[in-house]
Length: 382
Image: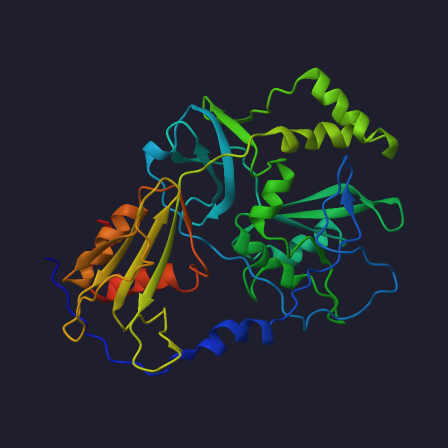
């Protein structure tokens, strides 16, 4: 049995169901990235929003701007192979400890998730219409400042080339991580920002710049990530092109996007999880950041036939009879100790590459994590 002690005081400041599901919608603030009048001279343009004209002089300094979020992603050496057979790219994130982009791949034969850490040297950046020397004088004291470059971009609104300064930072926080970020140092005396592409999340910028497409297949060859497009029959591709022939010259579009149409849809091993938590007040949701109330049940169901509900035994409740419509495939497993129930749930969840939840990042998974800490479970071990 796992020894536990709930040594934190009760907190009755719990949200109601209406607060939990309604507050985010009522208090939602539209986050508008600063408009960008320029694009790099390449086949596809990257934009964080509509372009602005010379007459757009609104002061955007009062708008709420999104800040970069740093994720503490820990990856073991065994999960970072030097070679990997064709695998589906699931997601792209940024690892704070590594200070690099990190890509998650699903290998369908082993049904395991592997990681690839960026080795291209890609760095966060923004653009500004101020000259490089002026920009450097403004931001050089920021510890995240790396360099400035003068680049030629294309103003899509006016269809004309423009000269811009590319400001490169050592990490995403240096570009957009709060009041001290370099983007906030590029305001003129009127408070108008001269920073463009400064509100794009780093992992999105990285994804675009490297032409990575989540959902498509890639291989790892000698430590490098290499696209692995599907084999497309020549007749099939011809029919595909003929289907869109009436839309004009879209050869480049077909070449770019056809892999998305012909890549198989993977049947990824996955598990769904839902938890029940005791609440002393009707229609009140316990605070997941405090997790003071016990977890009374954990439902687990995967796509390979595993359907189990962990139930915490309580003295005040007795085991009843199953109803006629009780699912035959559902197994009930009882636990005397809450900590043991959580540890077993963690063990099972950890064997799946994907976990499905309903607002689980905000409640279920967060509650389980903080509840485990409250019960003094060694999270490094599990």
